[in-house]
Image 1 (cartoon, one colour):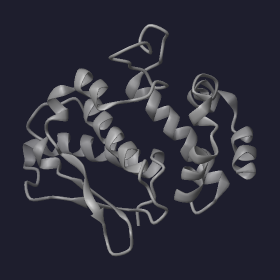
Image 2: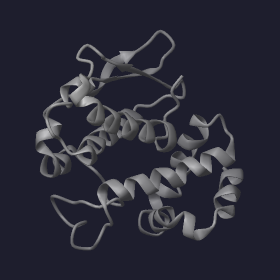
Image 3: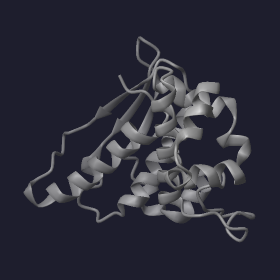
Length: 192
């Protein structure tokens, strides 16, 4: 964790503004050993890569949920990147997308103890849904799974039963690239 702290210190302040704000506003999470350990584990304890992923995590979280102000962090219906997230918050922000069940954590694990995620992009292709709202749901699913996480990593199952037709390619690409940014650059989950 000390190596991670050193690597975070080497990143220029202007390149880690969201992380610095999280450190200031939600210090119990952003600077906790448990939070840092998630990023170290998913990067095989490479402190430099873990630091970059951690900064990317807070950048994406700020991009998705916006800044947290005193007005939107009080009471029910909180929003903002640095406020705790609940299913109720998502039900207020993106109820239509929440009901789709296009991204889920499957019960149990595989034979190696890895968490199983299931993504069914065909469900959202024709709906005209906001990519940002879809990512918020994916974000929440990941965080719910991380509460019971293990260091064995995760498996992503993508159901391609309803593959995109030519008119859906742009939507497919947008959803897929957004998911890849979440999975490969930001979320503290190691996919094998």
